[in-house]
Length: 123
Length: 471
Image (cartoon, rainbow over all chains, first blue to last red; front, side):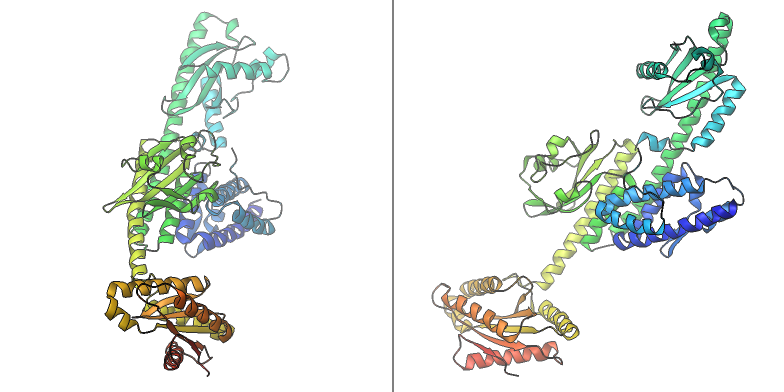
């Protein structure tokens, strides 16, 4: 089970890198880091483990989240990352306009078949 | 800040805590959010309800309608009896300023079947549960709010540092709009810059931002006058905002707050900052937003001042054309493009004939008028992609990207003729023009030199004509 979750974390790490590259291109590093900090805080209210996400001007890494599975194998990885990505993309849509956000979403969908993204936040 | 965000906690962890409390206190606990929706589940199996409902669904329509009606009119606390006769204690959670939700506590046995004393014990127990849960929820809210404030302050620090060091106006505008959308999750953010007697929206992001970008509002427009009549921000209704030119079709989500901050610096009004936010800010949030607005004003004042200096440094004051230095820089860029892509590039040297005599005879003011009118004629004779500048004295240079000699000759003749027929004061004015086509090995100087030589030929052949460099 833990092995499967680690695979899923690796998968989400790839997705987050794609989002990071795409949004840095349009927003610049300062705004992207601010956006990451904001979404990490928001998701951390429910899942503290998201604070283990590492990001700086060189990229984004989920290594410490994967390592935390040793101590917390029940971590709801899917829900945590989906909430993170949904909230990130919702703010991104406001910043870039829905058209560009749709472009990024389409690109992400190619990377992650079967995952539904919304540029509108859930109520 | 949305209430649901501040109450954003792990429901699983909360349910564990609530269930443990319910077991210890031997009472059932249920929580509704502030809108009457479910926040948590019943802590204990609802045997009581099952008994009452005789095996039917635990919460039928009758129950839902009862809760909605009872909680809607609940002041602080009340002892209620559900449609099936179960007595329960209901409490409002949170404070008057920050409403969190509603707490329902029911006994694990039917109180109607036991004595008065047991009912009193249940009420005391329910009150203890209420106090515990209310304190825990308030602590969570405080913690979440502190987290948000920390995030706000961190970003204000970063943004203030950048906004006062970044001088490119576009980057400053981007930073202001981005940070407001990211931190405050505003639906719409717009920044207007003061340009003379009007405000021009230089940046707009978020919903319906396309309606605002580029719109201009006169400073004498009543609402704009009202905004700049004081230092504090102005809270507006949608109807008021719609009175601004170009915003008649603007829509915002009902319940959102529209605030416009006048941006002031030591030199006066710099512009304005508008946000459409989903909920009102508390006192700290409003102060932080004001800090943002203050930094935005300083950053915009710096950036616009530097942009003006840069423009002045590359512009000829009399004609508004590019000056010699910026013209040479642009010619360098165009030459590079020509070499790289193999597209043609022509330049035209224009010189007003006998300008010194005109100036000496009719005075410098009259001479300046000739230069201004000539520059207007040149501007009206070229395309938007062409570049014109005052090279010095009565000399102008026109850069014509993508243009062969024949095309350049047509432009030159158009300018010559327009100057010749223009009714300048005192007497007729004419111009001579020299044309050169860029070669592969040309430098800025060699190309200008050939155009100047062509101009010399036009002069020596009798003036009021153009000459094509034959090489």
